[in-house]
Amino acid sequence: MKILIVAATRFEIRPLADKFAYVQKEDDSLAHYQFRNDKVDILITGMGMTATAYYLGKQLPGSNYDVVLNAGICGSFSTDLTIGKVVNVTEECFCELGAENNDQFISLFDLGLMDPDEPPFRSGKLLNNSNLKSASLRKLERVRGITANTIHGHPESIRKIRDQFHPDVESMEGAAFFYACITSGVPFHQVRCISNFVEERDKSKWDIPLALANLNQVLLDIVKEVAS
Image (tube, rainbow, N blue to C red; front, side, top):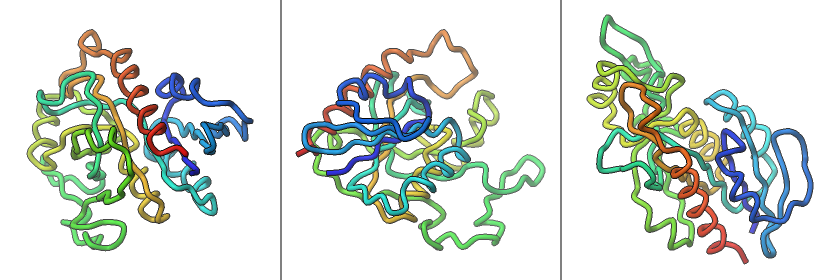
């Protein structure tokens, strides 16, 4: 088994990396590890869609990974997805890819500039049908994600996003990760933990330590289950 774990920032998966045997550092973004008999690479892309797409575009071709895991924290649009809950994001979209018409957002698909069923899209969405033999992964709630350059924090913009995309969670990298993995034909999963609700910004309500602890525990369980 050859596994690639992708995160925007190093601190999000440092507890997991500490469980692996360090082998060597390729460069500032990529390091090689060993877990049992398996090779585990950790790729730190930096935050946002552009950085994620760039580093995955460099790393995936010719690497022959058995599975790629995207790990991180995220915001929740639903009070049912409470802070500290780990989720499996199985649907993604670029919620800002389009144009404004006064106060209305129109996607590139609705504008007729892109075919909503042209690969890797299906009905304008990025979908994950990968199947990993992991009981811990199967236990996670499957959720719909949106990916934005600017995290939402204004009541009116949050309302519009909810009405148009019906998202469960929000990140800054997920859709770029989906796009790269689907296009590359590699099995993948996006595992995230809720650190905050998507609302007017108030970091006193966030719980990043809890989210990171829960995220890394689930990730370790998944790796243990798939490792040889």
